[in-house]
Amino acid sequence: MIQELVKQKGLLLKEYEYEREQFQRQTENMGVRAKVLRGLCWFPLRVGRSYYNSLDQLVIEVVRTEALDVEHQFEPGKPVCFFEEDASQMLHYMRFVAQVSFIEDDRMVIAMPSGDAVAQVQGANRLGVQLYLDEYTYRLMFEALDRVLAAKGNRLAELRDIIHGSAPTRKFSFLPVRFPWLNPSQEAAVNEVLWAKDVAVVHGPPGTGKTTTLVEAVYETLRREVQVLVCAQSNMAVDWIAEKLADRGVNVLRIGNPIRVTDRMLSDTYERRFEAHPAYSHLWSIRRTIRQLYDNPSGNHESRHQKIARLKERATELEYQINESLFAEARVIACTLTGSANRLLAGRRFGTLFIDEAAQAMEAACWIAVGKADRVILAGDHRQLPPTIKCPEALAGGLDHTMMQQIVEQKPQCVKLLTVQYRMTDGIMQFPNREFYDGQLTSDPSVRYRSILDWDTSMEWVETQTLPPPSHVGREQTRPSPEEADLLRAEGGREQLSGTSHVNPAEAELTMQTLKDYFLKIGKDRILFERIDVGIISPYKAQVHLLRQLLRRDAFWKPFRPLITIDTVDGFQGQERDVIVISLVRSNDEGQLGFLRDLRRMNVAITRARMKLILIGDTSTLCRHPFFRRLRQYIEELYC
Image (cartoon, rainbow, N blue to C red; front, side, top):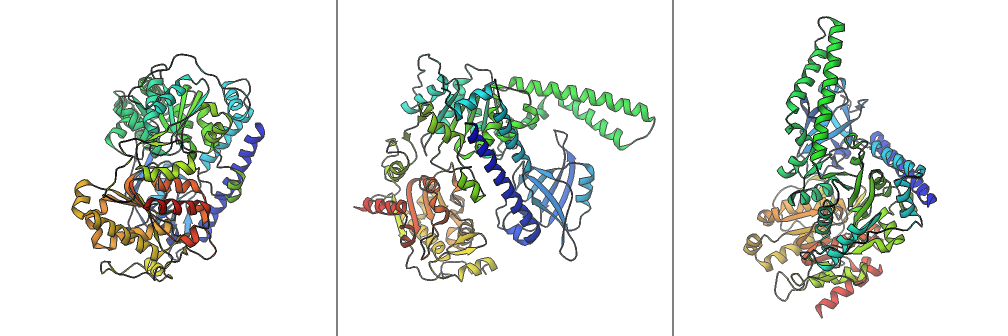
């Protein structure tokens, strides 16, 4: 029991050291242009205004002045560092760390540590900003594991002994509650949550209504408890569940940085509620007076010092009153797992903690939030995407083994599987059902036999083995970028390395041509009228980037671009489309598949499609693996 947690801590240390080495290598050896293209850096920047936000944080606005079609990795809450480029193109890093507060398109608002830091940024000539190693999150996870290991005679120790030991789980014994609007497996899952005294797991395969079930479980729990904590690994997952709860009329207080910036989400954020409080205007005027007294040190020093002290004391009282008012009104506190360590939640305890997308969260991150709760409810699917682990040694050691997996394996009596799926036609659903869910899933009649075209097969495989070299046929007459030109000179039908990713240019062109042919079968007018949406998925970022370039450069796609999303498997987690096209990329004589061997990623990719799934790939490479061999055979059987 304890040994497993000690092992987790050791693996986490390896992951931290690996990330730190990677960051140092990028900082010292990688050129600024390469960092920009990998989404690690914005350069050059134009500096905007600086001001104090509603939380009295000093922030500064920056805008990137060079428009590039590159996905960046900046997100609210991530640490960043600034640098200046001199005349000899040497980079000089500023000796402070800041934090992203808000980001939208090419504009970013960054929380600064001091006025001196703002002055340095404003005085720089060739300014850039780069992602910094997130040591804060690692520190929180290490501290959480230390608390769990040291816990004795308290609720945290009991939960540790249940999850990692032989201590039994307990249940309440009241009669089941009826939910006629849910299917039987969803109803059973909600009741399992209500009965659980310690832990419960809602296992939700793709399309089975996990979010619907979890929202119902939270709503019903609030009939018995005053307030609950709802967490997830990512801001996007937190925003999604928070929005669904708000739609049910639940008073949600969102702590942290929302990604889905809708009016509804903004109104639920702590910052917006704080600003809207009747006492806020008084607090703001006091803070402004304090800053003015600091900026204009005139008059009697002792008198000014006493006045500042009195104003600070009053400001602290007002801030406390506003916080208590906001938390007293809220029924659900929503934040990321690391966000549960926010100072606003210091000293607060909750009867129930709900963790959504628990299969994507490292166990150490879960313990940050678990320490604040008396019982824990996890929801997710451990047959889909695991946590992202960068260190090969930590991954091999099992750092991606999650708390949810631990409970599923050790306490199966606490797990309820949702068995009716509402997304995929039956032809698509049956293969992942057989491969990942032991044949326990069924398709709801509303989706079982639906399709876009009559006499169409729901899945097909397009072979790439004999592809010719890529051509420029079907493109607008626009000169390709240098990066694209290099890719298009590759050998036809074969993968190649692009940086640290893989790309297959001929397969990319075939992917777009295959989708174009299918669009022509459906009919352009029908696609636009019915808003038939499409997802193009590739496991590799370089292939995704090339596919996006091909989409932009062909005039055929112009009216359909709002309906087409191109992204990696990770980017499509939790999403669905009418049509999914998967470019598998790998084509080599050695049969190397890279992380295509992680079948959980393929489960995610396959199960995004509602009515049509098209796979583009080289069978001679892929079908050396038994999974892809079975997949190919299954698709052939659909034609019979």
